[in-house]
Amino acid sequence: MVGIVLVSHSKMMAEGAKEIITQMIGDKVKIEAAAGTSDNRLGTDAFLIEQKVLEVFDGDGVLIIPDLGSAVMSAEMAIENLEEPARSKTYLVDSPFFEGAIAAAMEASFGKSLEEVKKAAENTRGMNKIA
Amino acid sequence: MAVNSAKLIEIINLIADDINANKEFLTELDSAIGDADHGINMSKGFKAVTEKISAMADKDCGSILKTTGMTLVSTVGGASGPLYGTAFMRAGQVVGNKTELNYDDLLVILEAALAGIKMRGKAEKGEKTIVDALEPAVEVLRSSSSVDAKLFEKAVEAAKDGVEYTKGIIAKKGRASYLGERSIGHQDPGATSTYIILAAIHKALNEKSS
Image 1: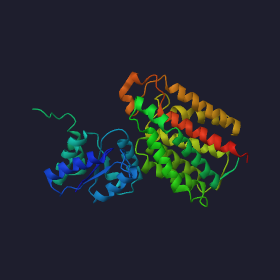
Image 2: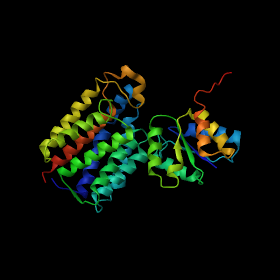
Image 3: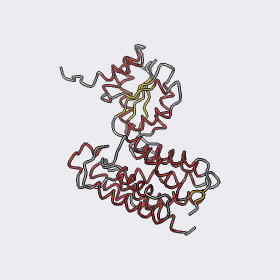
Image 4: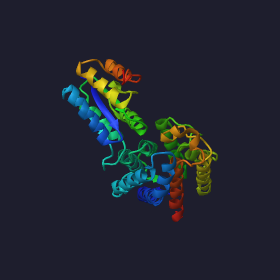
């Protein structure tokens, strides 16, 4: 199953997103938060992201969903630090943080491929919240 | 100049001191155009570095620089973590297992740091970033066939001019880029911390004439 790593400056934000997603989809989805610094400040940590990717990686690939700014930079650095086979199967996705995470988690839980999960997250970019 | 591992640790400690002394200034600059955390982030990061490298005097210079970079990556928090982290890690790579460094090594180190920062931040000169201070300094060092204390002094001056130059340009990277033209008039915190680091190195190298 495709794994998902939520990268945010805020631990509360990433854990909160994970909490809602797990409530909706159940704990069968492999989703981890890599957020905040080791001394509980706001920030991102490339090595923590790398570690979380390896925790959710089972061969099918991992999608990293960043909030903004240095989350993107830290995630890029984490991917470069990974070794194969995880490295070429870990993608950074450009999507809204929460909507992208839910869509990705949903598709992943259906056993979809890495490309399909990534596409689902990206497709939330223009999504309407109000009908 | 001959910088052995013990002296290298001393230089990095001095960088940490100067970053800490300028913590509020850097945060003030960052609160104008960023997210007001550059000073505290850098200070926390370099404090962690000084603890990590304090017992490394028997290790080679490459390992000390690499440990510095890795510690910054995991403790800084903001974009300066991966940026300065990459800079020091790249510097560690080019220095390798050397146990003594000279002024020519300094050029190689700063060239590697600059290349690392440009790669990681996808930044070029003129975008109101670290590059605007670091690249002019590297250009000065490259302008002569060999590097000495005098040339390095000029390089540090060029970095200072680079910081001044960031006041007049629009931010293209990071949180400041959301401000567009409103970022004009403010000096870049990243360029400023780069100048502080280079000035600290210069100060450390001239403390003892070895």
